[in-house]
Image (tube, one colour):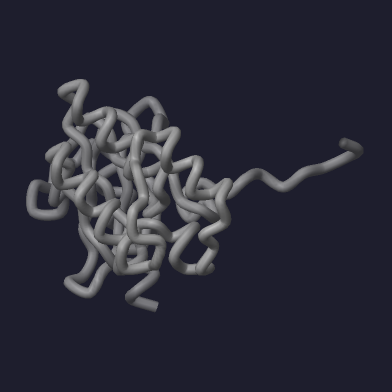
Amino acid sequence: MKKILIPALLCLTLAAGCTCENTIRRRADVLVIGGTAAACHLASALRRKNRSVFCVTPYTYFGEELCARLDFAPEKLERLNRFGITVWNRNPAGIKQLLDSVLISAGVEYLYQNNPVAPLFDAAGCVRGCLFAGRSGFFAVAAHAVVDASANSVFAPAPARTGRH
């Protein structure tokens, strides 16, 4: 029960405009949630445009859509090439190391193994960050924009479809 109440109360407190500095671990222009190659590309491109970027993945690595499924199909690796990322070592360890180096060379701050729990809202109801749960407990990241770049929409699941499509 406490594990559910603590994040909910924390989100309500932050949404109400409380600036709990001890709760907000980082502030950034853009928060990128997810560990895909696209997340790494987006984060590094935004950083190169002088945006402060913070990237968080629930995995212990980046490249979730490739390495978690061992999916190294030529079209997937070609997508990396279109991002400007050349894959020399076509195995999980090589791709993980490559994506880490993309983020490091761009100066992107990032964290592994932290799961999004709930969005943070501003007074107008716009999403302005996220509450995360990790091994060190709960923490929040505040941002002007939040992007879910995960392989399976961990932060912003697609709405249920109704009617005929």
